[in-house]
Image (tube, rainbow, N blue to C red):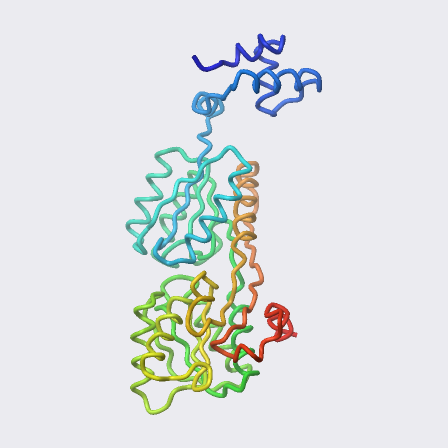
Length: 348
């Protein structure tokens, strides 16, 4: 039979209460007792009953995460970062995909609440239509919005500053010689799509770029392919195509390649997010890198603070993204050995 806490206490020659305190770490015990209890637990291969412990403390040691689309490579990378952060705790992650549908998202949130998760992180799929479900859920369980967010100050939020990210992109293509540019993005139903679209317009004006009507679809490679066909059907290609995410840019690059358009000679192309395939595309994609690990760390910190101070003021944290320059905007032989150094220099 598996060893129990009573077996550990007997082996360590301490009370059951002392053994429990030593193993939980919630209350101090003497160094000598701590050493004996830990030694006894190791000798007996003792594993605590987490279910029973959770019931006693009225916690489940679970965190829910709702993302808009698991097929978008940005989100699995973010999930991986959150998982790594959770490994230093006793909590486990329950992952849900809303499929970009606010009604499905509401069902996923309610399911997590019904399972009595300790807290929830969510990247809302719609800035307006997700609002009611996020508000309702936040009244029942600590909740942090991550990456995307609903309109208004409803909960804590952590993500990147999309205005800064787009400024880095627009400044880069302007310095590379672009005089005309077009934005290819998603219909602005979610905050990321809206903020990047608005930032492109304002930053392009600031850097003197002449822009045409944006092409708006969704955050997929298929839309990038379709958008490229629309651009190729026009009289002239712009000097630069700024894409709302990397998937759009990768689809666009593929269609340009098939049509014989040379990137970056004929047109500059940029993405956003720096997913794994951005570096592997042909040509490799200049993009904006989001700090996944830092976002995950801050999201869990915000959630932990919300556990301790449920009525505390909401925090909104915008992290600074990084421009990663690759072949889609400059020839590789023009890059210095340290591309990151080049990226930093372009912002100074």
